[in-house]
Image 1 (cartoon, one colour):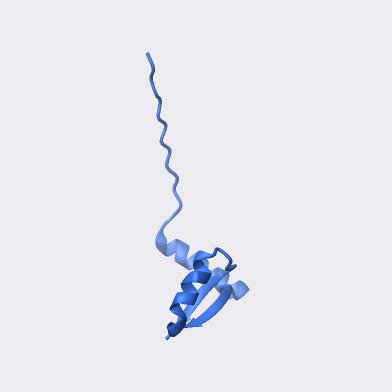
Image 2 (image 1 turned 45 degrees about the horizontal axis):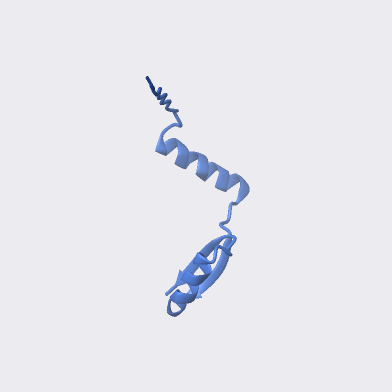
Length: 65
């Protein structure tokens, strides 16, 4: 006879409000800035998507209109 045992364990991570407050404090203390790998015009959307799919970007890909 084969039996399987499943163990499910949850964790408590706090509230969304607490998480947002922590992020705001971290930003105030350390002046966090997102890493932007490339900026593309909306007309260059095809190139932006190709860059994203290539897995080459190190940061965010920004598309401006």
